[in-house]
Length: 68
Ligand SMILES: [Zn+2]
Image 1 (cartoon, helix red, strand yellow):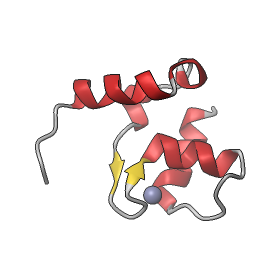
Image 2 (image 1 turned 180 degrees about the vertical axis):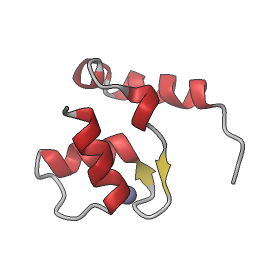
Image 3 (image 1 turned 45 degrees about the vertical axis):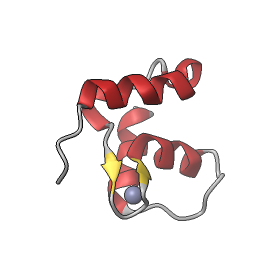
């Protein structure tokens, strides 16, 4: 497991999808998914808007938490 700076990762990600994810509880659910090779929030979001058909359980959980 690499020791990435979590704060920097979140900042970078927020820059990309700032408006869309402004309301999401990023601190609770953000993180890199080794199964999907993407940020869990991003995967969950894509899954939610049907941009992707498959997401692992962790990403589906992230989607549920984010949309609570
Ligand atoms: Zn995943």
